[in-house]
Length: 91
Image (spheres, rainbow, N blue to C red):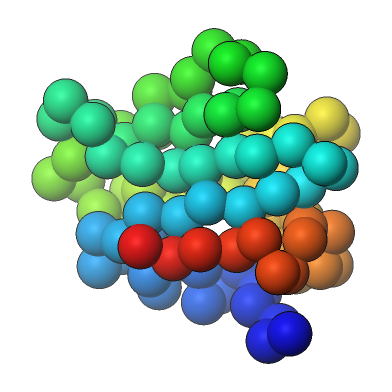
């Protein structure tokens, strides 16, 4: 399993790539739909968080870093490898 930390995730987001991953047994994604980047809790249909407009790639990684799952930010989840590395998909 390759270790992917937040800096690499941020670099992918800045080029317009989407991500999917599992954390704590639940599926999450950052995807682009209908003109906006959104964060989804895919497993339980949790409400999405609108991150920014599709064209605002410079803001995407910065804002996404602060999104929390429970009491941990996405930056912390990736930097501390608290996600299921086998589940990470960068589209």
